Length: 237
Length: 237
Image (tube, rainbow over all chains, first blue to last red; front, top):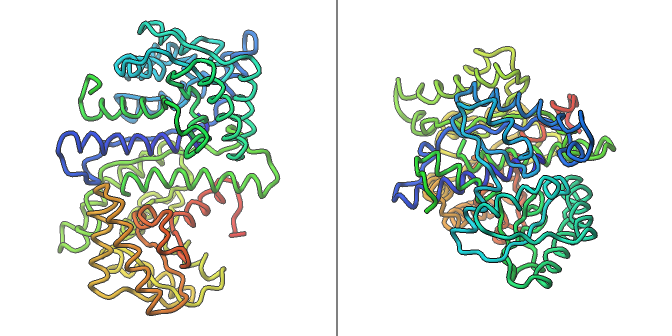
């Protein structure tokens, strides 16, 4: 839901569509891509809302409901939200617009990891995503456990997200994210590290420091799931 | 209007918004980005339509009118089209939706070049864009001349666009585009080379072969113009 992550999600979706066409042996042409829309609307900070009592927690829902309503009115059949923390409101959004299939980023990622035969998983995310146990729950549903960083490591991730990517300081972001990724790998061994906030892959793109690690990008998994729906492929391939 | 170019345009717009906030001394936060929507709809090939007599030339207009109508219904005030050749229909689109300001990629680029004090300009574009003299006209309005490639060089550009970027073969694209860019620079000296098809910068991104050349990306100029409108800055800065 950071605007840079939203832009990157379109790139990942276009890439996933290209892969679909290739897998089907079809020529890749402009006209073979499905119609798709991106809505980027200002939404109050998700983690902040989840941390505040009562009223605050509902603030992000209103603009997301409005955007989803407009996407539904445009005729969208399937919608993906390119923000992990925003999935705190997934059930409310899906309930209000049952005519739209609203993909679930953590569940798609958990299914992807289970299909890949992952055994150990560690999670880099926002405080909000840890608070609602978004990935812990989705991974448990697939029989997978989830290692989470220590409190001070979470603070480093938060710094990389807000003072790094969201503020346009990519060098700081890379430093923060690679630091925590290496600590997780050092502590838990050869785990799949889920970059469970869409800002994290933006900060780690092309980072040499984490070259040997198994980094999983839920945005890429989500984009592939959306492309499968667009081309009528129901199951992961 | 190639889907990859559309995705890249959102990235350029988000980047241009970040620059606007920095120039104003404002903190860069998610919530400070303006609401923006991307519509990617299948549109028949623009160059092919412009080459065919009569009926054919109107084919791309219909889906573009529909998309623009839906963007207008969403409340869009300013719209940019991330495809140079599609500007053949700019006047028709603008006339039909006078409530929306439809930016003009070639005019924005010509104004940008004039403001930068450019003297010589060379153009890499689709056959359709050459055919309608989109840049020749816009540049002439700013008192600038425009060198165009030789027929065989145009064929190389076309190959890079369709068999390269649009088909997902980026290596071929880079080869084709850098070849023509170097020939233009060799023939015309230190000119500004306008990458007047949104697929060209995608193919030349990070190309070492053209590192010394003055490459101008109209998509970047257009994204900056759109960001200025969003932040209420009327004149180029």
